[in-house]
Structure formats: C-alpha cells, structure tokens
Image (cartoon, rainbow, N blue to C red; front, side, top):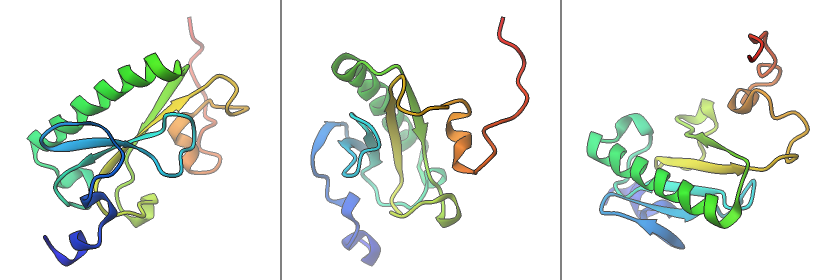
Length: 131
C-alpha cells in the first residue's frame, strides 16, 4: 500500500451495504439526501479514468444494484450520478468514488439542469420543447 493509500479513508471499507471483489458501496457520511451512496473501487487510485475496465464494470454493477435497493427502500423520484475527478472538479478525497444521489420531488425549487448546476448559471439554457 502506498503512503497515500495508508492514510486513505476509502482504503479501509466501513459501513459496507453492498460489495463485490473489486468495489464496495457505502452510505455517504455527509449525505445530501436520504440514501446518498458512494460506490468505491477497492484499489487505491485517484480518478475514474485510472480504473481498469474490470474495475469500472464492478463499480457499475454495484451502482445498478444499489439503485434498485434504494428504489425499494427510499422510493426516490430520480437520481443524480456523479464523479468528481481532480481538484478543479471538486474532488476532495483522491480515491475514486461514484456518488449515487437519490432525488425527491420538491427537494430543490428548480432541479432543471441537474448536474449542470455545479457551475452557477449553467443549468439554464434553451431547450427543445418536450412532445
């Protein structure tokens, strides 16, 4: 284990709700909504683009399994899925992890734009009318 892995909070799984050989899922310690879950690679690497294909597949399998479990338990109205890669993107723990954030009707006054809201004023743009 490298020096950074020795001190990495994600290299020592805790509160595991689902797992496989290459990844695990745990509830976020500071959830933005009920059921906010992190899917974390077991191997210590900083960003999503460093994962080997089989690690990415393992993470996605857990992401889908956990979404089904959250749907049954919390019955959210939608989800945001996100990965922060790099300090400029807001990454604060440099061990790859995928956020699965359940969303609920009324949890934000204007949810339109979803993940585009990470940059102020970028969620509002002209859209084609929905049929």
